[in-house]
Length: 83
Image (cartoon, rainbow, N blue to C red):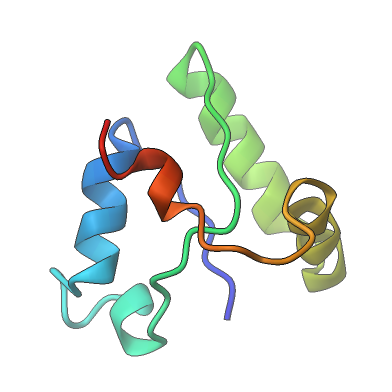
């Protein structure tokens, strides 16, 4: 399962997903806890536009986007956990 979202605090949001802070959420129900792709934007408007663009794409396009920067689907949590 792939989850696409936008946040102003990536560290906090990934922690929430990993610890199932919201038990009824999509990420908790489908056990989405691995961070495989992320990007930063200067303005929230740009981040929201990119989120909509990604969500509007096919699963194949999402996979290609992830694999363009993370071919092994490694968990990138170690890159953000100590921010």
